[in-house]
Image 1 (cartoon, rainbow, N blue to C red):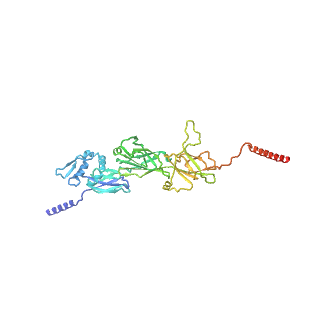
Image 2: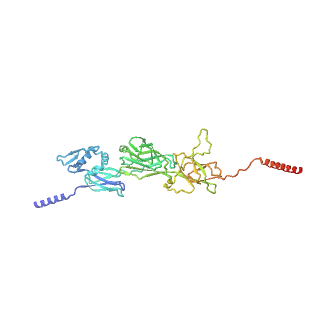
Image 3: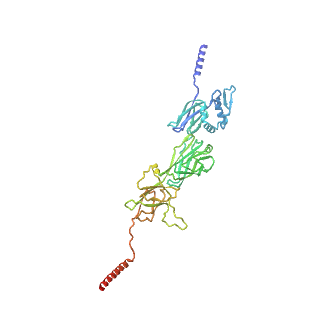
Length: 472
């Protein structure tokens, strides 16, 4: 019997030695497909009934670094080292139990450090089609789970399986609107960017808005409303001066983002002026993206447009050279000016060079001149002395333009009334009538006196000749 008992004892001991270490699993539900999830063990864990202990083994090579990291948390972890010096136990778990969000935010902020000193880790789990992420066979302990959407925290593994629900959401692409979708060079356009907060985005928010070269950012017009209230606190912006083709960066700090609730908004407004570098393709663009909690939205592109007008000079049949014009916006230069009013001013225009046309991939047509609206010059004349057509860039489709002829081709009458251009019409013909010899008016004038005088002179000559013959 003693031998049998001894054999049984040996078998039991061998079986005990062969039992693997307790393993836990964490399942993240409501995970967002394609997002990445990582888990980091920060404390050891044991339980007995309803009693739980969290600790660090002092023999762990990262013990000091991990203990220091947790002691720096707000609220801080406090430790008591065991009598034998082998373990450091968390002695204030009761005061920490309702502070999961604060702990998670702190650990997420220190994530780069935590990655190097964690007791164990499981990284690179990608959410599947079912919206789940499974961390299998994790060592039992206190784990911190992060995602590319933000931070999560599993507080303890008191069972062999933990279920964590992803409460963060994919951040939304900001909405963006322009005050007008059509422009003329020199116009002021107002933009509005609206960012709507979602769950889990409590980290710093960076909104980047990239403008094309034809737009001048007016720094003094920038305004930010957070949850409906305009404020100058809690955010910063660059650049701080007017800039052509600016990349505007708005940074909303973490403290401000923590006050923002799901569905609340950050609204950004500012003005730009369409400058003299406006594109000849008639399009100016703004592209906005938002970044927070390791997420970046897809770009939102907003375009504003202009049109170009072709003026053709003709007599109704053939093209004519030698004319000159001026162009007016929303004001007929031939209309009577009201008392006390001012006469409308012609648009200022700059002739485009061959290099500019080539850079814009515009093939120059024969007998054609090219102009663009330019507020920095004083010229108002569209000179077609050596051309029968002119193309004008940078005009607003929503405006009415008046083309006024100021000089007609030689031999043709000046067109008195301007030609109106509405609704973005791309081409117009300005027709001139040929001049003719003006008809004579009134009586016969001096012609009759010349005829009578000639007859009298002739009669006098005949009389003198006859008289002389008679005398002879």
